[in-house]
Length: 493
Figure: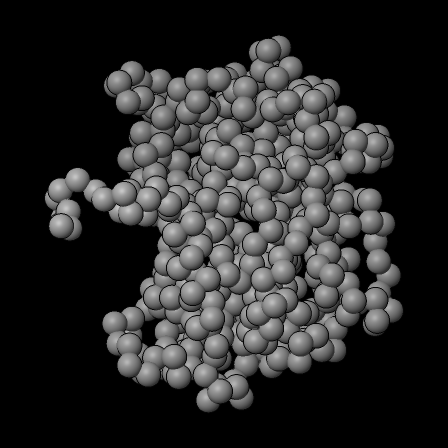
């Protein structure tokens, strides 16, 4: 007799219950893959790529190679608009890992002057040496629209509830200008730069946080350059434990050497900064290891004041200063009065534009359910994330893929090279080449993408390469002459 809903489980039921959830999700996804065949009725429409950063333009390169019609929509006034915001920052990974293979083939065929493969580029160099030439390539330039902010994606004539005939309806992309574009598929590479995490330790804005917005900068202000006057001779509170926090702290330390009265306080939720300090000389990314070593020295020397178990609860403005109050889960309070706050608290994806699509999001990370166990920062660094592609990125809404850092949700383990493999696989799937889509490969060192000799040689030439965090590229800033030291610390850039 069957055990029914409440009796003891049969051996067969026990066996079924023992199947790991990740395997169940993978099996569901594999079955779904075969159904991701776009309606022939939509074949005359373009694939719309949202975002003209490294991953979005890589998608365009693969689409061009496959002969698929496409259109790239970039919200900014130039390609790589978000990267330009941290143009002063230097990446942990050298050029050889920063260039998509299809993009390289297009550029080489067009007489491109390729950069030194072992050099660590700044964000500005990434845009000027790579993204600008790629965007200007004759197979991409005619299909790129700048200042094209997407405000919504749906199916023409179908809200999220309606099913019958849905797969034959084109995607409807609405722009901020009111214009609309029909598409056969959507590759969303819009990133997370515009949606930073809040200061509040509970995931909600701290009390008074919005009112104090004029005193708060998000990750990677140009402390030694364009933003110098805002920090020179001031007391700055840096909140966050990732590489973006470390980058800013090192820059502020150099500024303090140059400008008397410059003070630095660093606040983290953890009881220790050991995770930020990292492995030091043992780190497989020497630039990252040096970051931690120098930051530890600054803290131990007293040049940076470290506050641990700091849970931002309230922010208030008093004239030209701002007060930040921490309240830990047991009710213990700490207080800091500063002139400026840097919120290096990471980033999160915004799926609002796709709210009328059928998405299958992991409840914790906000990635697809199939991808979540592969990128979980509790088990993976960026170098140990396995290769993945269309199968893991597909949603119930056939033809819609979020790629790049947005695909990782809140996981800080993203790498540009990983994003390039994502779009190669996704474009193969859109072309109907599922054999190529499933053959995902990624050849990276387990804990990083830099060589030790490179990091040492480059530091001597341009200064220490440091990093950023919060689900972005984990990238670094050239800080020449810093005498001591430090995704989602995005760990690897």
